Image 1 (cartoon, rainbow, N blue to C red):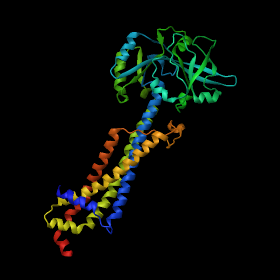
Image 2 (image 1 turned 90 degrees about the vertical axis):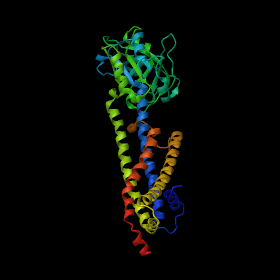
Image 3 (image 1 turned 30 degrees about the vertical axis):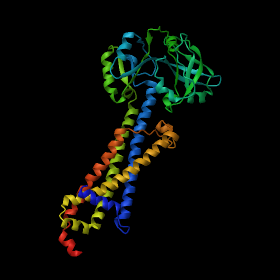
Image 4 (image 1 turned 180 degrees about the horizontal axis):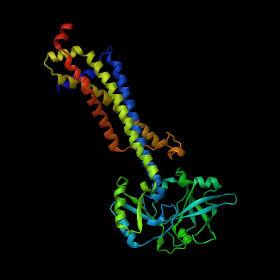
Length: 410
């Protein structure tokens, strides 16, 4: 056992009840606990929010869309895309691509005897990424659209169901206008499921149904579709995969990631990282300042011990290590307690969702906490290293303690 560690351990384990630093050390531990709780929760909440909102957007638009270049960024299908096996194979073979699904969107009107609402009908098929969308289904069962016959089943949002006084299993009429035709096309649908994402743009507008229904409304044959939605394996690599897809598809088409399709939303989400770093920086500074005060008090209280150790041959570096080890023990104790508290909050939030948010502002009803290992481990390491580095300067005041004067005074 090293000399410095032995002394530091004795200081930590046998502190005098009348010690001046005793209550200050307790306050310091409490301050580290509070700082760790706030920092870890800010990381978990920020990363959780980014992940959840990204998942909700991708549930409707995938991670990427391939459409006609002249579609003019419209949410409705304006120009068809050839549904060729060669193009599908090219998209699916792109490194990083997980799945590819065709879709068609067309504007319409959902009407009941007492009311009506404008809607966007999104036609999809059995290859749609239901694993992403499934968690937002609140009632009913998702139709598979696998049968040879065209399905009249649709999914509508809880918002539309409330506004039109509809429930699962009801039948409803929809009116559509095909470009170049003055008469509306009337379709009767059966509500198979009701979803809720808390995204107003989606919940107020979109209904999901059979791709063949949308194709029939446009008067297209089976070789045409409105575009393709693509899911990638690693969203962090979305920009590179989008560029790779654009290199593989014909010049008539263009691939756009959901970051390109929703720039304001993703700019807002990117600010979370900056806010997290600001919070972490401020709290590390405050904690380091607090620990500096604690260290100076401990040095002043142990001046006689420092003089004795130097008299016995201990160097300044060895004595500095003793007090830094003592400070590290205080920091580690607070960090451990802080991590335990945060993990307890994380588990309870995952199970009960007791931290509530306004979905009109944050797009979610409960705070989505995420626990990315590299962020959590990196934050703990960063806090320990930076605070100890900040304590090196006040610890150097130990060099000013002269053994002869201390012993003479005693």
